[in-house]
Length: 195
Image (cartoon, rainbow, N blue to C red; front, side, top):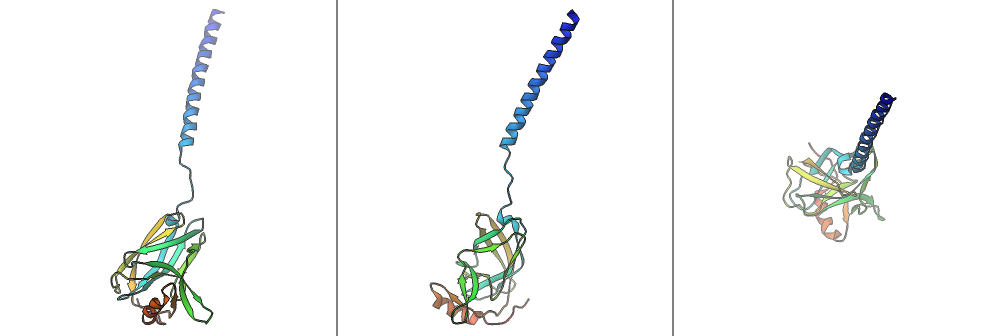
């Protein structure tokens, strides 16, 4: 009988010790899980890639950047602004036909939205990044860096080459449209770009 009690007490003590160890381990796992960072979709700036980008060479005044922006992510993204050291003012532009049947450029104030798995073409005569006031001449072969800012405040930076180009004869519709119309009329005639 005495031997049975010892065995029972030893077994009970062992079980209590194992239970205590298991409780401590479970508490640590629970704390670690609650402190783990939440997994979420990648920032918009990590999902977008510029393909075949280029910027129009220009001595002064205005220029524009083009290319294919691809959204490789699983969520829609919206570009709300862009910047570059090559220009003191950069706008997101769309090209539309006005009431008179003329093709005009205007700022796209609600930004460019790129659906998940889709792409946005920035092209002459369509959507583009408009460099409103060049800080220095842009010569063919120069490399120009741009930064896009998204609605989630993330950013994406890309660098594209400058190319000679004569193209898209659109006027600018904005607060100071007259000034920009004159600058654009000689710079953006119909034509194509050269490599």
